[in-house]
Length: 213
Image (tube, rainbow, N blue to C red; front, side, top):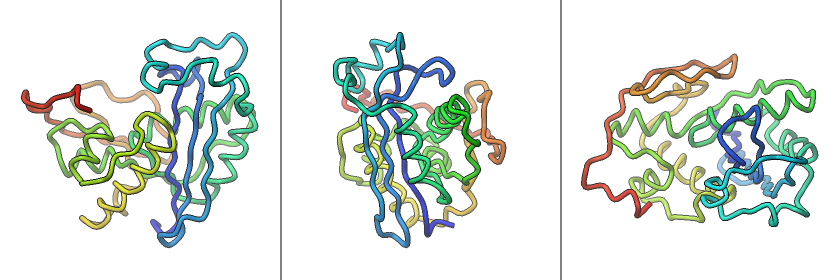
């Protein structure tokens, strides 16, 4: 199942898929280990769309950067074609998949039926002690750092992290499994073909320097 997969990532105006929107998206599709398609674009804000200041600070993207960006509907149509029929891979896949699902609903398109794999879920199982953010896991698995919190940079890091995780052991049994940090409430949303799984996560050691990541 991992012979054809697409790693994708969204940057958004906030964390609520029903009221926020994607402002940047990227996807890279691999078949038998070879990159065959790459798509990356900024996405124009909808009229009167609120853009959380913290989200702007994290990505460095402001409304001014998005004035001449790609139309949201066109961007999602293109992305849908890129990923069609492949395994969808993301770090914290539930977040990105819910935004994807909400956008497809908004445009009257059929829901995603593609299987998915969450590298965050794999990392929590194999390394219970946090932190498990993408940059931290790339450090742990000796993955070269790209531009974090920008869609294409995160996609490239996730793709290489997936490669390291594959070398460590089989991943097929993680397909369609969405892990959640057992210290918190279970997510309210999951793809209909997905399975929520509570994970025992240990906090980061006190000596861990969060500011460095």
